[in-house]
Length: 320
Image (cartoon, rainbow, N blue to C red; front, side, top):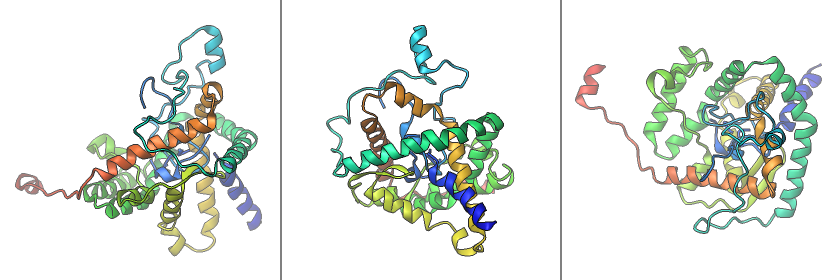
């Protein structure tokens, strides 16, 4: 019976598409896949996928199921909106950005095909059932709870990067949302106090200290990454305190939570894969470009941040 439960929980997680992730509001390295910035806004391809990443759905456009599908929009002559954006630009990364190292392209292409097959045959049917049963507000709440539970890597990496103010923000967010916000179901830390969660991971920590991204990788199930970010993903996984304090039987609940996280993230961004299928001439290149552009933006922000220390003024101290 236990083996059956383990299979039921592991298989959806291993075959789920995020977070590209997500965290994801979780770490960028936990970014998902094919399903986790100029000109017309296109969906954040790099934020959705197979991984357990959760993201702030307020900042990530998704297709409204009530809106016409892309094929219908074209046949009706309608203009794609933000939730149903037009074709992405065909250009690759601009000239002043570093050239992408992709020596494993033949292997990466085959892995992408495998991920697409997993999404088509396993994930989409599961997500379709999940969407019918769980209404959007509940899906948003589930995403916030799982994101709140992933505070340790964000907090630790903020410390590693000497961003002490952000580390303090993560700690305060966790305390407020875990209590007043009912385990994170409500993001009261942001709504009441303006404390915003920020994606962070060990890959960004390595980038802060000058480690290059290395060759591009398309990971089975987990999606686009790089050698450096794959190492960061492993390091972030080792920060999970449950692996060290929880009994062995807790592995069932951990995999079940990961499966739920992946399905919920895929449901929140279920229009992105259809967008790529409809508008992308080179899907492999579009995913690759979106991933590196998103990572470069985050790396630039982390590198530009010096030691952050918030010293209270006498007026602020008197308030306490």
